[in-house]
Length: 268
Image (cartoon, rainbow, N blue to C red; front, top):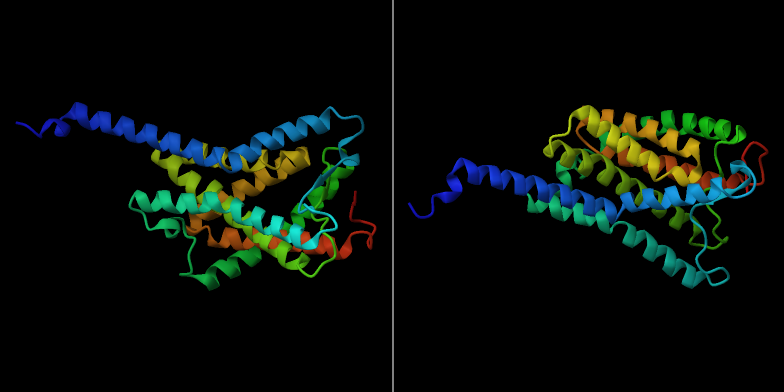
């Protein structure tokens, strides 16, 4: 009868293939517009550092640098622009989740439903990972496997601390929503095993930190494994966002306050 063709087994299989192909293309495009592109950029940067004369620890990886030295208002405009545009992939993910019928970012546990849970779990996780991560960084840098990371080199102006906090939150939201919540959801829909999806997420996280050196890659890959396991246990990226934001806030502001004042903190 007319109109019954799509109900045939062949038609159903064709729809499944198209659906899977669409999901695969969508995932690749989201990553190409966000942290996948950062991973490629990081690899190129690391290759440049390896082939440059001198050891890795004698080179610096700069985060949160000035975009218009000596022009604070123009600099602030660039900082705000960079933070805002970096969050566009998060809004894209929210749109794509809504389009598939999921409740937007609530589907990955990024909402205001459990603020106490997210903050307490996130604070504990930040305390555990932050201290370990600092010791690991100091060790691998001393061994010559990492660049000297300069978390901030902004001018001493009134907006410095707010920009550093905003940058930390932006990093946390982008990475945890895309690399944990969204990516694991899509890989599961594409038929990946939980173990394979965990490895993919962790390796991607390590890859876009490779610009810092081997230590940046390995340390963030290990953090990625822990974050994926906790996400599967809690069902929310909220605690991960809180933990990541707290780790970065302490790193950025701590460096601003301590650089050049304590002997154990490497500076460029």
